[in-house]
Image (spheres, rainbow, N blue to C red):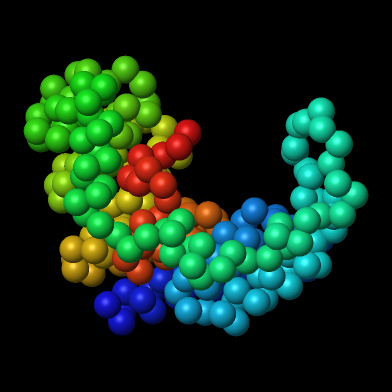
Length: 226
């Protein structure tokens, strides 16, 4: 675990450097900054969490409302909680310790109404892909393969079945987490290097850090929410 933890910390540091460099050029990203600070706090890097909080404090009020479409009057001042990092207790609840049984149970729940996932759970992958009608469904099958430990099949599916570059990246991100979890460190580092060469952003670096550190990286893992 120490080597894995060091890798997770490096990813957090990578994310913060991106944020700090952007801020120096007047480009602020409050949601990403809050997320990076949250991951740092969970992983015990309170120094980075504090620096993220400072970045949030330095962010102009107007930036917090960029892209928001609403017919409700926005407050003149940004609420303090938007400029702070959640408490450790809140973060422990939001990103619990990874539980393989919980993740597989979630896949089984999804499979109750999704035939392609039910087939994937039975490792009837060829039939599962025949049932897939969207790029998302194809990605979900490959993600199930990764979580079930069929790594080579997941890689092959990502390359030969998943047509969208963004969705292929999602498969390789989860695959990297699952390789680290299973102690297949050399393979995990190769996958991580491939992801890094594709320019990890703050979100993906933070999610990887959480997964590598044995946290559930997001609600609904391993499936994407888009």
